[in-house]
Length: 435
Ligand code: HAX
Image 1: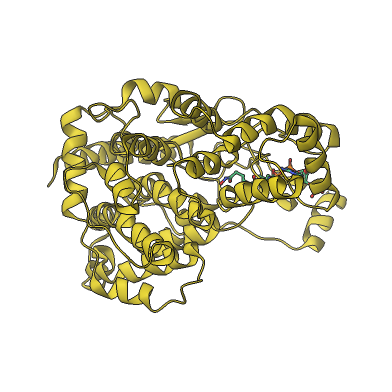
Image 2 (image 1 turned 45 degrees about the vertical axis):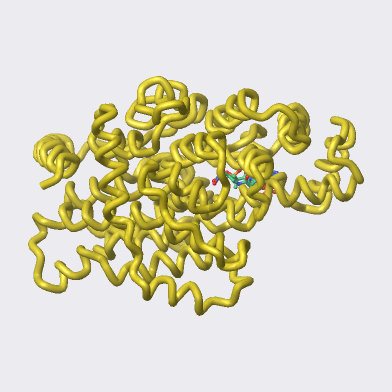
């Protein structure tokens, strides 16, 4: 058993036993009450799922195993010469609740590099798609095609014991995370770079090598990718993509199929696709205003125009957060340090000064502040990654770290098939009016 798997086995077995006796004592205790508005309102805030890897506070933002993003930057190992944390370290932390050593993350980089071989059939599937297929659709199909190698599916068909589900899920998780950057870079280079591909640099870490395979060289872009793939990794379990992975995985679909399902959720404009929508909207604004250096007044006018057209301001608002997203702030801090003159980064900062007041003035938007997607596009454009339809794929590669670590925990805990209760409007009326 490898060192991370051994650690995960020990920790999860111990917690599984503890939870069993906790539930025996406390299983009947109420933890929440649900209002009718929540049943109709997208189940906002209903406590109904166990998710160990991270937790979201409306005001503080995300904490991964209790650690904020600034704390992660201090605590997680980094590559020599780079200030940003390695995503390998965050995966380790999320999976086993321990800050890894440099040796641990080096081992993990090496382990993922060894597992990164993508079957030829996957490339054949991608090559068969029309070149103008959206990159997220290609990504979802690539992930589904990778499923041919699922250890879980193979061992389940052979009659695997329930006690071994966690083991097969761990193997699939490690293989899938290792292969995602290869598939994502292939999609990018096929669609945008003349189908000319770049071989992996085995001396690099997971994120650094991904940057290299995309074909964007330079130490700063590698640093950005390490930060980007860390901060997008998890946002507790209730967000649409994580929840989809959790739901699909609860049927004992392997993590390839579960993750493909999650990526279908991430591809929606109210969720992960918002990162492409933000920069697309900024490009439309600069074109419409005839300048890449708009004043705050011009920006405010364009925001009002967008709202008047019955559209949302992409990158603003959140179902849970009620403050600026710390993932937005982390990217702002990065841009302040690494990027000196970018009109698009300036626009993002001017929007931050302008949009919250306008959205707040509408009187209905619960969170007028920027979310993670408000910043990323302008930074990617600065480094030459201008093909914005690809942005949600980057988000997806990162999101695998959290949702797959969480899937390992679900299988280790023996979580059952997820099956909440739906009701009709007639039932609600009857239950409430005749109570
Ligand atoms: N622009 C304009 N109107 C907005 C808005 C925005 N950015 N955010 C919310 N509103 C509106 C809603 O559309 C809703 O209007 P109606 O009552 O007319 O339907 C009203 O304000 C109340 O919405 P809310 O309760 O504040 O927000 P929700 O929890 O329903 O929705 C969303 C949260 C993120 C979907 C929403 O804020 C939004 O559409 N934002 C823009 C898209 C976006 O940036 N999505 C990415 C979110 C982060 C993420 O998942 N990243 O992957």
